[in-house]
Image (cartoon, rainbow, N blue to C red; front, side, top):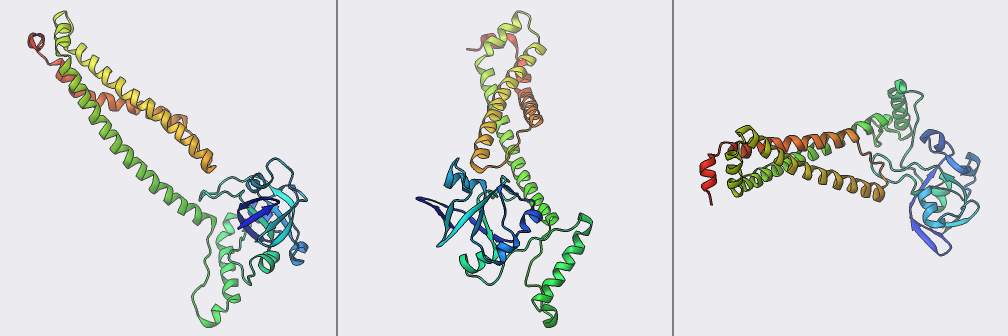
Length: 298
């Protein structure tokens, strides 16, 4: 919804709620104050802003006491929420404005119903009991028991949301692993082809080395090292690109992406293994060359 302050405007989420929101959602006003239940009952035009909205409308200025316009209704800014960052769905929790529920229903949205209720259980052990009580209360309020009708509402616990998020993450991880495996296979085949071409072009050099005393093991080790260096170079470039892309995505989406040092180490180690694995065949082929035939090659 569009919000204006003077000549500036921004589109943000408007959330109508009660004074219990701070406690239930553990999301508190950092400066100023949240509105009270008396403010809600009186349909006061108070607004508590997220940090992103403050930045978009006020920059570095203090918004407390200023008047903003939400739709066609003016509000006084009474507080600024602490920064929360993005949620598990990637939505910016700081890009929203909180106003009293009754004000939202009567003056802003012109509604007679609410679409979301947040409930906090006393403990994780009592979560299911709380779900059952809320479900029974809603069925009674919606007169579903009397009419023997199914639920016309949905209850989601934090555990269910985390499980759904985990399933999504696991699917995404499997997809990334599949893509990475294909990329490694293609990269390995590329290394194999490059080394075979290099050996063909350096047959004279290989024959000369053998003629002056280099053994098969020396030639084998030389080309395995060369293929490993080629693979390591690609791995380092890939790691650097990954870090740069992660930083850009983090800045653009405000996701708190963590670059794991062990992951970088294992990626580097794996690039060495790939280079050695796909370099064995070309290296062995080079080590088995007849030095006399190699020197005769033009």
